[in-house]
Image (cartoon, rainbow, N blue to C red; front, side, top):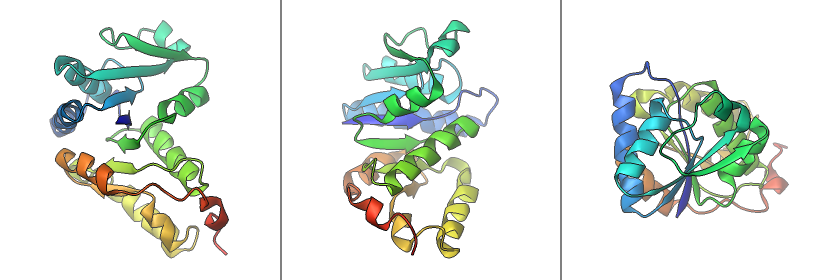
Length: 192
């Protein structure tokens, strides 16, 4: 299994987010999953990479060259791809993965997550999208996505494109029980 993990680089956050990241990283290594992430060395990105490496797992960083030039990359990750742009980075993060996992994060994490959901709605990405809702962090996003359906900006079936879980131990079981999305999703992407 190969998974993309979106997460924050902030170091000034509640320790519960670091603990959830550590638990998830250990579970991914136990599952022998290859982890693809944004390449950062601090915050939840650093916690993810540190734990995967300490547990003997596989992790690949994908980062724009300009971020590497200011030394944001994790020094212990040897498998790195450097891109020219943020757009190219996002495409490479989900290329060939079996699932996307979103941990808590700021605008970058939200932007990556919402792009993955948009691509799935259009049938351009078919894999599970799992949102780890540590400390109810993503409750407002969950309500917003529900509102999108209620107000008919998305169809009811679109609410099946993502899954929210409360605990890191639930992520891998949710990936395994989630079916791939229809490659014909473009046919019902627009709400009629």
